[in-house]
Structure formats: structure tokens, C-alpha cells
Image 1 (cartoon, rainbow over the protein chains, first blue to last red):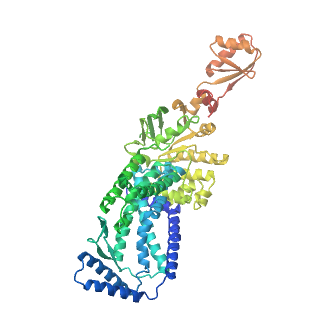
Image 2 (image 1 turned 180 degrees about the vertical axis):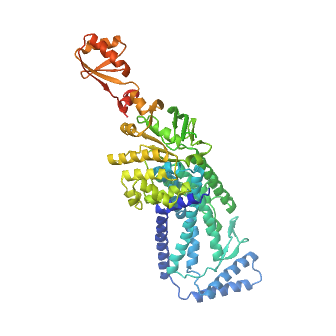
Image 3 (image 1 turned 90 degrees about the vertical axis):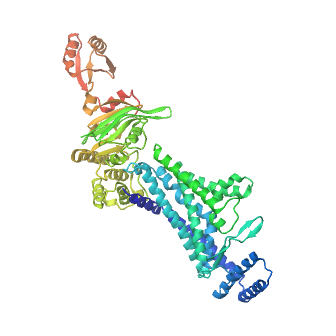
Length: 324
Length: 301
């Protein structure tokens, strides 16, 4: 028999517990406030002569390019900068004034650091523990469905709402910033792939992408990271019988893990913590990870391992334990 | 046809503590079995093993001929149960709760939901949130939930909890009619001995994890009839009875003893012949409660 009716049940319970409503409320409040304060800040230092300044900068760069003895890697960097500035002149958009699309893109990095993982653990932490705390687990497990099916339905419903949380975050970030900032500009060029090698900026792998492609990539990585957080939170929710204990443990892990990776860079085993690998979108945009050797592929593998181990453990415990 | 419930030699050990020791139960269709025992006797642990919430250390459970371990889904489709309290989702309405559990069974129509709500008398309040329900209404919603999917076996843990006397009578009538008219097998645990006595066909008494006694209610009560005597010389009467192999005790002026009904005329004749003035002799019908206290050596329920 299909899992669909069970997934429908779990989705109904998430909605009726108001967990998702609370998350949307938090996102609207936080993103509205940030977008509004940023718009105020920009209004204060608005430069009415930005076109003239920008044209001067472009002319200066083009002079550099006309010389013969330009270092080839330098030349590439300058050309990318010129094409970026030209884009802004053509569209009449001040490059120092972020557009709403840039704000929405930035949310994948800023939110992915702590806010989104915390919201996901709010969603995930009581998905099983609330049933044991409220005494409904006994009925849920005696209505003719094997336990692994019950847990699988909870997992699928959770993945669905994690996806919706991230999408809602992106849409609210765009919507809130579009009220105050320039709403267009999804095709603005962005340059990714900067990296530091031997203390020097390495631009060999820099690629130019339209902003919307860059945004899709960053949100895709963040989606993967959040699914891994949700898997770990699901395990905690199975283990703890109270929702508060599982939410608390998840938050403590996120916060102490983050602090640990910042204050002790010589403790290299820290690169195997899921928290160090979590800001995938940051590492993708060029921010240096806290430990050497943490490539994007390495971080993805670390997260996938944590998620798989958590899911296996959650299923083993849930299907075998005595419900007292 | 196999019995609707057949539990063989169930045992459960938590660490070193033996919670349930070699309990066997058998329940036929159309029959109500009372499951009686003081708190901590292992009633709830046994019931949880019957519905797959706890894995037995030893023993097996069959429901309608399906082994619970190997054929969990077909076995559990035949069962409706309330284990301990009828906790339902408080943030959903009564109807949403029934729809939720109906979806798990897969075959429940809107019509059936209205029907089970009608059976327990909840049709009026079905679209209100469960958190606004009284304890009695929650108990009835729990029973409605257990009736979804036309089960062959009902397992109800303390179904009379939280109900007023009228509600208890309603539930009793409902369970009797479900057993008589629909042929459901019903297992009811309760600490209300009077309830078990009035409602059940058979009773199993469990104490410290072991089955102490079992049988029909009439058998359990009539097992050894007790009699009360009022005589002028109780001390001598006691001695005379002892000569005939009957132990008696003095209680509040009465002389009490246990004996088969058939032996009473000859015993009385012997007393009169011994010069005892006989004022009253009466059967002292033991209630199930006294029988129960006898069996559990006076430990409170």
C-alpha cells in the first residue's frame, strides 16, 4: 500500500501544529527588518553622481587594458570587472546599491549560517517526540502500518516542509527587499570561483554567471545542507521523548560547533563535524572554510555521511524499541 | 475458525525485572474477556505486547490467525485498541482525528466515519477541536477510533476511566451489543471489578506478572461457596465443624466457612445433633471483588 496517505497525515499535523506558520512569521519579521534597515542605510549615503564616477572607473580600467605588458591573469580580472560595471551602466543600476535579486541571493549565505538550520530543527525536532510526549504514538503505531512506514512518511513530509521553508525564505527575502530596493536585475553578471592558494588570490577558475543561475546553485547547495540538518534533527526527535530536549540539543550542537570551528583552527578533526561543513553556500561563493582541505566535494561528503548515519540510526531505534 | 486472539506463554523482562511471566490468553469472536489485576501486575505490559508496542521476550501473539511478528499489517488491521489513555490529537477536530486514523487503515469512507461517531454518540461535536472535549467525550472518540475499519478484535485498556455512571452504563451496553450483534471479540482491562463482573463473559486475573485464575465470572464466584452461621454457642460449633473437616472463622458474631452446597444439610444436622442452637444459616455470596482480594492476598487494586 502506498505511503501517500501517511505523508498526507504528517503534512496535516505539521500545518495544524502551526510550526510552519511560526517559521513563516519569523522569516517575514527578520527579513522585513533587515531589508528596511538596509534601505535606510543606503538612502543615507546615496551618491547622486554615481554614473559619472562609474564611467571614470571604466575609463581607467580600459586604459590599463590598452597597455601591452599586462599580466594575463590580471587582465582577466580587470575585464570581468569592466563587464560588470558596463552592465550596471547599461541598466542604469548603481552597483553599490544592492538590488532585490542580490539581497535574495545573499540570504542563501546569511540564512544558511544559523537561521535556516535553526528553523529546520524547530520543524523537525518534535516530529516524533511530540507524538510520544502527547501519548498519540501508541495509536499511531497500532493502526496497521509497520513502523518503518510511519517514520518514512514523517521523513518525506519533513523534507517537503524543509524545501518549502527554504523557498519561502528566498521569496520573502526577495519580496521584502523589492519594497525598498530595485526589484529587477536577475541577469546581472556574477563572478564565482575565487580562491586563495598559497596566500594569493587565485582567479584561474573564475566563471561569469548570470545572477539567477548563481542563485539557483547557492539555494540548491543550501537545500542539501538543510536536508542533512533535518536528518540529524529527526534522529534527535526519535531519541528524545520531549520536544524541548531535542530542539535544545540541536541548537546547542549548531552553536557550539560553530564556535568550536572558529576558535580552534589547529584542531583539524573539526573538519569532520557537520557544523563545519554546513555553510556550503558560503564556501561556494568563495569564503574560506575553517580548515584546509575542505573542498566543496569534501563538505558535501561529510554532510551526506552524517545524514545517512542519522537516518539509519533513527530507523533502527524507531522500529525496534519498546513503546512504554 | 481460529480464535480472534491467541496469546501463548507471553513473557517480558525489563533488565532483570520480570514484568510478565508466562501469560496466555484466548478470546473467541462474540466474547468479552475481562483482564483484571492490581496496578503494576503487568496488565498494561501484556496489552502492549498484544498490539505490538512491546516486543515479548518469549511467547507469541496471533490475531485472527495472523502471527503478530511476521504478519504485522494483516494482523493489526483486525484490531482496534485504546492503550492506557485515549490520547488523540488535541489540535485536530474529532472528524480530522478519525480521518487521520482512517487514512492509515486505507479503506475508511466518510460514511463509516459518520457511522462510528453515531455509535458512540459524538455526531454533534465531531467538528469541534478535541481540546474542547470533556474526558468522557475523548474516551468515546477513542472508542470510535478503535471501531474504524470494522475490526474483529477490540482491546480496551480501562475504557470506563473518566466516565460518569451514566456514561459507564452506555459503554457497557455498547460493548455488549458490539460483541453480541457484530461478533467482535473484546478484551477489557479494568480496575473496576463491578464493571468486569457485569460486562464480561470470562475473566483472567493477573498478579505480579502471572495468571492467577481464569474462568467464567460465575465459575470464579461459585468456585467455593461461603456460608454464614448465627448460633448460640459459636465456640463449640466451630469445634464440631472442624471435626467434619470444615475450617471456620468468627467474624462479627457470625461464623463463616466455605463448603459445597451439597454438604450443607448434613453439616447442619450434625450441629443440631451436637446440641447447638441454630438461629440462621445463609449463603454468603462472594463478589468478584472478594474473590479477587482472596487471590491477590488482600493487596489493593
